[in-house]
Length: 247
Ligand code: IPE
Ligand code: IPE
Ligand code: MG
Image 1 (tube, protein in one colour):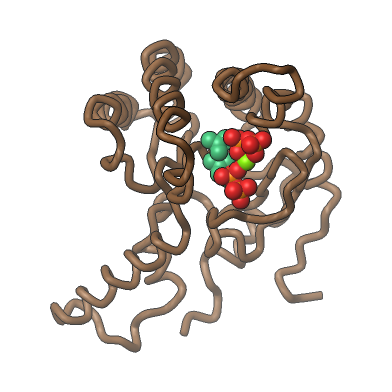
Image 2 (image 1 turned 180 degrees about the horizontal axis):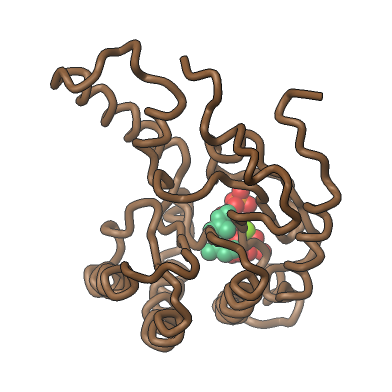
């Protein structure tokens, strides 16, 4: 066992007031729309605008990586019409935002398995990832068809195959080995996890990575969230004392 698990003891993450890696469960689009007598799709559209604003604000604040939960592996349980609306929105936003994101030096990364999406959407996503692959100012990780348990199951299979192939021994499986097999393997340790809409659960998001992240649950519905809300969450983060089990 490693005595200094990479994701839980990173001095360079522990001290700063701006988190290196922020993840957001963007929740409350449906309730936002309902409160206005609008269809749920209108809530998702407004939510996509929030994502655009928050990406910009995170970049300005100096965040290295922003991870957004856009579609969970459980969201397939929603009506097909809503799934289609979400796919349409993804298609639209890649089309309209890709150039701006690229110009701003943002690398797009996907966690989860977007290959389960409609083929044209999956292809657009692949093209956007390829186009921005060399960007280094910031990473935008979008969770698409993502579930943390599946991510861990796949990591276990990857490591089992490495052992079976004689590339490593079972005893060499430690925290770092598991991290090397997760979708987030190339991202900084998760510092701050925000969920909007008043729900206080993780809904199968980044379960491994959140081990020592600071959690902020806000009542704001996602379409009402913007750079101001993000900066308020950063202030809350800066006031927290991260102890990692120490004193
Ligand atoms: C989050 O908003 C967006 C996705 C899950 C895609 P919801 O659609 O879950 O909104 P509520 O929770 O019903 O208000
Ligand atoms: C989590 O929100 C998934 C995303 C924000 C994409 P949900 O609205 O799907 O979560 P539950 O069902 O309330 O747990
Ligand atoms: Mg929800």
